[in-house]
Image 1 (cartoon, rainbow, N blue to C red):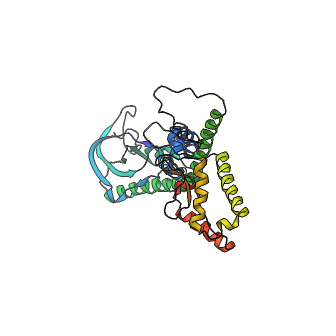
Image 2 (cartoon, one colour):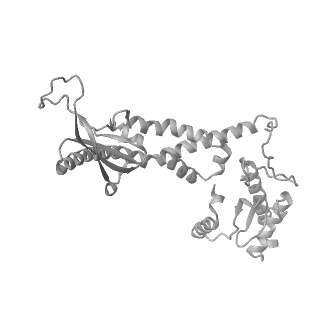
Image 3 (cartoon, one colour):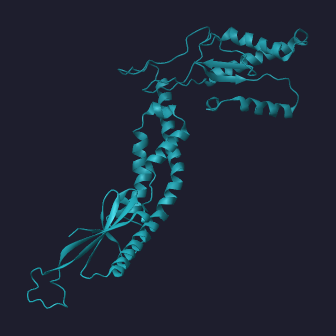
Length: 343
C-alpha cells in the first residue's frame, strides 16, 4: 500500500512569509561581500535579492496528469457489511489501486504550509519534488466513480493553492521595496564604517591578501578620493570630497572677480577664450591623472576633473541670458551625464 499524507498542515504560510521578509533577507544581505555590495548598482542588488527571496506559488500542470492501475490485496476486515468471524486479523480480497500522477512547479514545502484561510477538508497525497501522487483503492471497477473521487481531491488541492497564492502574491509585490530598504541600510552602515576608519587618525592595518589601496598621485595639490574596493578585479569609484569641491568653486569665483575688476581686458573675448582662463587657474592648482590633465575640454563639456577615467567634477560655462537659458543649460548638462556621474 502506498503511503500518503495530509497536505497543508505542518507549517503556517504566514510564518514562512515573515521568515523570508526578516531572517532570510537579513542573512542574505549581511552575508553579501561589503565591497561588492557598495560597488554594485542598487537596482541590480534589488533584482538579485528579490529573485533569491521571492516565493513562487505552486502551479499544477493539469494537462500532464497521468494515471496508473495496479492489482492489490485490500484488507476488508473492518467492513461491517461482510460476514467475517475474526476481525482482529487482516482479511484480504483482490482489488485495484489507482494512482493519479499530478506534476507541479514550485517549492514542495508550500504543499505543507497552511494558508490563513482553510477548510476542515485537506487533500492527501504522496509528495515528490516534481509531482503529487493521489491514491485511490477500490474493490469495484467503476471508472467514472473513481474519476469523480479524484477530481474532488484535485479541486480541494487547487482551492488550497489559490488561498496560498492570495497570500504569496502581495508578499512578492512588496518585496522589492523591502529589499531596497534593507540594501540601502547596509550600504549606509558600510559607508559609515569607512568614514569612521578615516577619522581614527592612524593608517588602517592592511589585511593579508587584501588589494592595494588606491589614491590619486600627489601633484601640486592632491585630490582626495573616497573609494570602494572589492575582492575581485575592478576599478574603484572615486568621489570628490566637499572641501575639495568648495576649493574648486573658490578658484572659479576668484577668477570671476578678476574679470569683473578688469573688464576691458576680457571685453572682446568669446566664451571659449574666457573658459581657458578658468582652466589655466585650475590647472595651476591641480594636476590630473591618466593623461596628466585633470581639467580638460572635451566636446561640449567645458570643465571636468577625471580620476582614473571617472568624472568627479563637471561644469559648464555660459553667458548669462536670463533664467530660461539657465534652466536649459542645466537640462543640457544633465542630458550629457552618464548614470555613474549622478551617483
